[in-house]
Image (cartoon, rainbow, N blue to C red):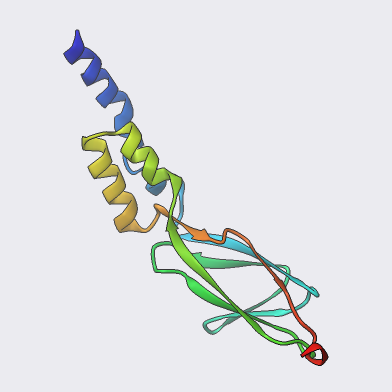
Length: 130
């Protein structure tokens, strides 16, 4: 009976291995807002205007946002990769085989990562306030 139960759990949990890879895309959108709004957000060679949804590729270490507006001091904000909850789900639901397979797939594909912070708000300081 115990062997049947273990086989059933393994069979039912198999589709969940690598579940972040199933449910997430390679790119996550990070909402960026500012006070005042209408600031320019620069990431690499891409620019956006707040409020904006800034795309970032999962599993590549993160990125730096530079937020600027004329008459205000520019600010930089680091957005870093962090392991998402799906990794822990793989470990819990699939132990031991599913943990190795699912977590491995999610980490290698980058889809097991999220961003920290998940959303960014920047309060810009007027240049005269130095």
